Length: 354
Image (cartoon, rainbow, N blue to C red; front, side, top):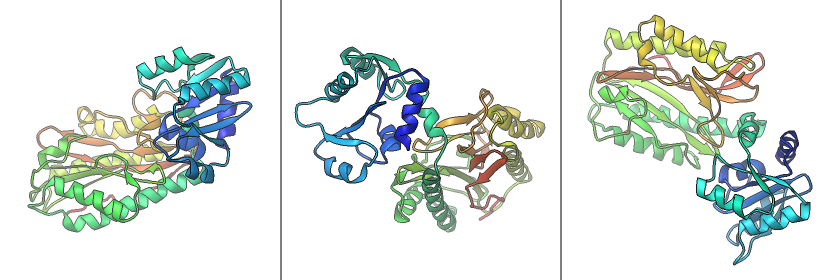
């Protein structure tokens, strides 16, 4: 099914073939994970090349493409040229957004057909999730939520940010994650004003906000969630900021649906934060797409003028950050539909004071 979708995209762009070398694009098209390989797709054939380490598993798992072993002394450029000549292909697309500049030039100079940038071809295809892809994202999210539920009992004064990050990693792996979507962010107190702060040896103190941004991978697909909890007590201002972020998130969620621009979704949340007097403290976008990549299309930010597509998974993660004092971010994942969205995140998000 995905090979056919790639072929239809080639037709729409007047291309004869595409060569996919990026692991995630190869996995999207074939369902097969390997550190080495190249997938060639044209209107006439689809061939997956890999080396001896993966050939048996690839043949057992890949059904929509012919699987061939590349063999010692052969290059992926070389086998691609053989296939291009067989097809009489004149234009072949390359992953300009995944290859290094040097690799892109090397492929372009070596191919026997005109190499063109694939642009947004694969990004656009990956945006709309199949039910199988959605199930894997939900699987990853449930693992992350189970880890979150368990970690709450371990967040207390005297425990370091780094310890909580390590425990989150362990718990997600323990409950079945393939890997982390990204290195967990765990920041507390004044550190929580840094949206992408790095866990440190700082000890959690009573009166701190602790922000945890984390996710894991299930069969190649990512989850992403953020929760901010308080330890011991909160001030009136902390409670007000938390409620403002939650209200902003709910406003964005209420607006998010297929056909609405990402800019409009971001604006609905941003207006709540601005009206509360914290407009300058929300410096990133409302959300981003999630799938095989932790950040992929579509986006919801002040610059996102394109309508959101049905079938995309979009994060909902507004935040307020007061430098040197504290920060709050709350993040869910939404599955966009024509008439709204389905929130894939089940973890509670009312203010938790531990």
